[in-house]
Image (cartoon, rainbow, N blue to C red; front, side):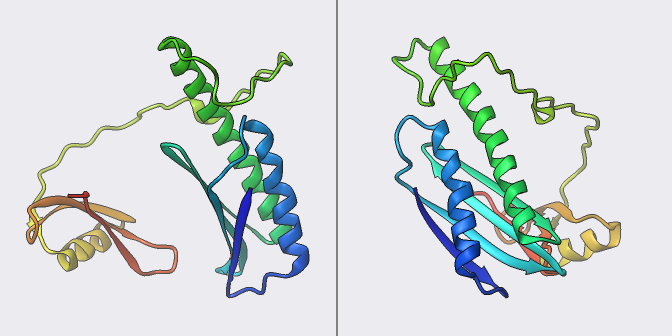
Length: 182
């Protein structure tokens, strides 16, 4: 597994690099073949907390996790735990789909122990459904509307492109825009 580690507002020491390598290389046990894609890791300091972001590109899916803690090593442990849950969840879904479609073999290693993983993230409960008219507006007006209602995102019809867009407030206090790919 190739791991690219970069630091933002933080010096990546050899000890941190070794710890990240050791922890992330444990994830290879979940796959039949070694990962050929480059795993991206960003270590940073956000609002006084030690943060880590990890992206693992797989065929058809990107596993991504982010954690913040007072201690960088604790952040690394937490993000690896989160990635393991995502891998198990994706593995279960993929193998189930392959079996249902009469696939030739599992993409992931099959565990021989009768271990059952209970993951609270598997339960998706929709608790509210909202409908509203999308008023055509520009991006600046959408940001103003979002701030007025006190939300961290706002869905609107972009008057320049006639498409549904989303503006959102980023952790750094700036704003982002999500547009559909054309």
